[in-house]
Length: 366
Image 1 (cartoon, helix red, strand yellow):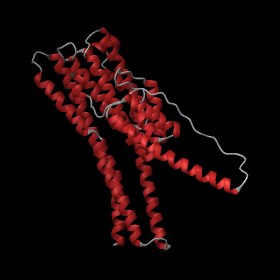
Image 2 (cartoon, one colour; image 1 turned 120 degrees about the horizontal axis):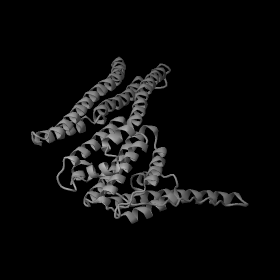
Image 3 (cartoon, helix red, strand yellow; image 1 turned 90 degrees about the vertical axis):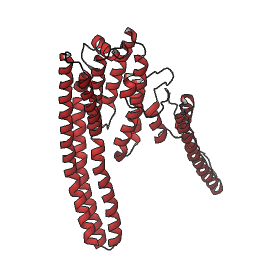
Image 4 (cartoon, one colour; image 1 turned 135 degrees about the horizontal axis):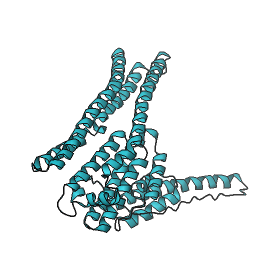
């Protein structure tokens, strides 16, 4: 199948969930003695401890149920967690990944899904938002893949109509999930373009269903182009945010290093303790530098380039128009690979001087 080979699949998905959140606000009143108050305080502490233990147990079971693709159990367990702790991060993250999705009927409640995702991201610390957004998107993308694969099994008017809705849902996820990196967004646009190209070149009816869908329901515009138009401003905004994040990180590092030095000079910490703090900073910076290449999606674009080269090699000489189309796409991917190289070099140029500064200070302390 087309999407089985193209779309990434990771983890089993779970079904739609309606949140039932409640909080016990009952309090003891009219306590007439110190002994009663102490007893009440001890009772409250035990209840809180019991609640924490119960929540942890429920989340463990919920994750086990998720691994088993047991939608009903996951729904029940997440509901119970939120009844105890309405703002529980673990439960909301599960909902962000699987709420609004029915793994049996392949129902996909996009409005509800986006609400849960935004709530889950709102509970996460700032430094974890990008990683969490990527994890959530990966889970949702697998659901899109499953729906698309199911639609391709029905090469009919209804199947084409369902395919169009699936592609619109995919576009909306990319447009509205916060904290997706520019590289991820752009790579998904390119991936969508490749799916459309392969579908148009297909022979079997199910392989051509994506082409039939956009030709019938999308004014003959390939979905990749639709995605590109809709997501251009989103990618630019994320690039600006990422650049700002790198700039602020540099300033914050300089302030922290100055504070470490001041604490040593005041005798608050020793030089050895400062060195240990700087080693932690160095590890973080080196990880950021390694992530620059990983987040650039260079590998994915190279795979897409190789795929287009293969398609071009398999085309008959008389397929002039298709050869022209594939060559144009090759030029676009080549351009993107060049842009990625520039972006990696730019980001590296911002991070490497910070590494050099930390290493220089560590050398002073040796």
